Every structure is written in C-alpha cells, then in structure tokens.
Image (tube, rainbow, N blue to C red):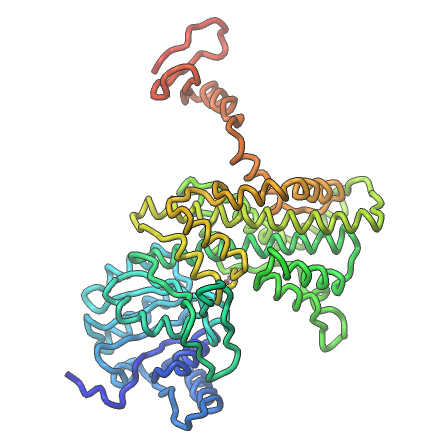
Length: 508
Ligand code: 3PG
C-alpha cells in the first residue's frame, strides 16, 4: 500500500475551458488535484489561475507532464477525471493510463459528451484494467466553475466513491423552494441545498440522459429563436425592444437560463462598430452532434420527438446560407399584411403563450424518449430525480423544471408529461394563443417549425383518431402489408385485392 500522505485526491486529464474550471471547482471544495494535459501551456494556465484565485497560499493544483507522473501523484486507489473530446480521444487516454500502470480498482470518469453506446462498450472493454465510470456535465464553462448539473452512471460501487465529491461540486437548489442557490465567486462554496447530481443508472444511462438534455436544449433554443424571428422580421422590433420583451417573459413561466442569456446576447454591442452584435453574426448554426443523436435515437426507439428533430433541421437549413440567398430571389413571400400597433401587442402575448406550450411539448417528448429507452435498456430511470438534477447548473435549467419534477413526484409512472393534470390544464388554457401565433407567423411567412411541430404533436397526441387508417390501406394496396380492423379482434390481420372491387377480404 502506497503512502497517501500529501498525495493528490483526484487526477485530472484535459484542461480545456471545461476541464480547467472543473479543476478549480474541485479545488474550491477542498480537493487537491494532479492535473495533466498534452498541451503543457494549459497545465501552466490551470496552476497559475489556482494560485491567483486561491487565498490559502497553498497550491491546490499539481501540474504533471506525463500519465506516469499523474498516477504517481495520486492517492490509492486512484480517481481520475477526464475532460477530453468525445470519441477516439477517450480511448487514447484510457490506453495511455493502462500503459502508465493504472490498477483494476482505480476509477476513470468520462465527463465529456460521449455517445452513450460507446460508454456501454467502454465499461466492458476496460473492466480488467480499471473501472470505467461516466458522468456527463452540463452548464458550460460557468457551470463547470461554480456548479454544474452532473449525470453519473455506471458501477454502483464507483458511485459510492464519487458521490461525496460530485455532491460538493454540483449546482445546488434550495430544498424547499426548488430555487437555484447561486455561487458566483472563486473560493465560494455552498454546503447546503440539494445537489444537482444523482446516480442515473447503469453504464450508458447518464450519457443517454445528457444526450436527451441536449436534444431538449436544441428545441428550447430554436423556439426562442423563432419567437425572436417573428418579433424582429414580422413585427419589425429592434434588438432592445425584443430584449425587453424577453426580460419580461423571463419573470414568469418562461423563466430560464436560455431566456436570460438571450436577453444578454440581444443587448450586447459590438466593440468595433457599436452595433448590436447579434445583427452582425452570420446566421449559420453549428452543432456538435448531441441533438442529432437524440433525433436519431427517437427514430430508432420509435418515440415521437418532432420538436427536437425540427430544431436539428432548423440548424441544417440555416447552414445553407448561399442556397437560401438564391432561393430568396426566386420564391415569392406571402401577400404583405399591415399589422397595427394593437395587433402587435396581441401577437407578443400570443407568442409568449405559444413558446410556453411548445416548450411543455418539447420536454414531454424528451421525457417520453428517456422512458422508452429506459424500458428498452432496463435502466429503471427515475424521472423525478432527472428533472431535479436539471433544475440548476445545466443549460436548460428553468423554473419550469420544478413543475416537471412535481409531475413525476405526483406519479412516478407518468407515461407522458401531457397526461399530468397541471400540464394538461396549462395547455388547455394557453392553446388558443399558441394556435393564433402559429397562424400569424404562417400568414406573414416567418418559419416557426419547432413551435408548429410542438402544436402538431399536441394535436396528434390528443387525437383518439388519426388518418393512419388510410395509410394502412395505401400500404396494403401496394405492398400487401396487411391491416387490422376496428370491428374484428385486434390480432387478426387482413389483406384485400384493392383493384378488383367486390373481392372478399382475406384473413391472414
Ligand atoms: C455542448 O455540448 O457544448 C452544448 O450543450 C451543445 O453543443 P452544440 O450546440 O454545439 O451541439
């Protein structure tokens, strides 16, 4: 047994923006870190920032120049956190740790946005060498520094070792009110409140949940952008006016981090030109892939997530800037309509309600997707706990998440958020304005695909009868795919020769 005195509590690999901030967050919470990055300047930067922020005068971050040195600096059994790009780099780092002599009872935690199936494979692949654990992190660089939302999964034993650390560094919410307890300054720690970190389930479950978090994030962001588009292009409001409207919306049911930062983005002035920066940003959206993975998974699982998928498509459409420039010269807009000042005020209220309803539907899709994946993978996910974790620290944190938490606490088996009495009533109360907003935007030619996709989802989900009867007829016509009948037992399948009228229906 090695002498653990003076050794570091945690090894850290990857000191990019997220990694460095997680290191400083861990250090603020009393952990001594051995830090390594292939880029030695990043190691130096993390150590320098620790010294600058650390009032104790004792360095809390020990820089390392190799994996071997990293392991030699750590208490046994080793605990190593990775903050490296998802994909092949995770495996490269794991192989390097094996080469450096990592032990079977050491734990390696992947905090990146790895594809959940890779995480499942890695747990098995490395089990002879070390315990591969995962814990997706959400909250961006500020979250990493002052309290992220954490979604750990994998070995239950590893969780017992990681839990106290994760509970310390995670964002916290007031247990009574559900409101975030903000940490904003280096050195500040919050010891009370409920941590936004809880065990999600077996390997892969945490990364799956984080993936869906990001899918919902795509939807949330896109819907805010659509509201902005209507206000800007449809009603002709300027950035400051829209920021004022969003700031007001952020006081009520739409209170969220994404709404809050949208206000700041809209108000931000470019240092060079003095103009609002948002007006100078090229309208081509980037994406790193987690929204796409969510949309793909929804198709694979067979769970409707049209708002999330539409948000991914909206980013794709935006990337065709040149083509859009060309088609904008060719394709005609709708007949122009004059909107009076009174009507503008009505549209603003309608848009608010539309955003709220559409958001409920996007979350309903995300939670139902997790539910179906949980059944398929035997994860036994706890949705009240997931909603609780998302109340603070993460990018989709919002007042709204408390209502989702309440819904799952009222009924742990809730199949879809739309079935919860509170949400059903909200949608019923606000739906008229939602419809009007979609109709208005359509008539003035502003695309609001995600908000409309949510409305179609709502209307589909509340329809006891859908036109899939005709669709089944079409399938049977050209492919003899068979159909079932409302007036016969459900397990009986039928096929008919559609072209020759009067032929008897055959039971298959
Ligand atoms: C992240 O993981 O950094 C974001 O949550 C999503 O990133 P994206 O918008 O680039 O896909």
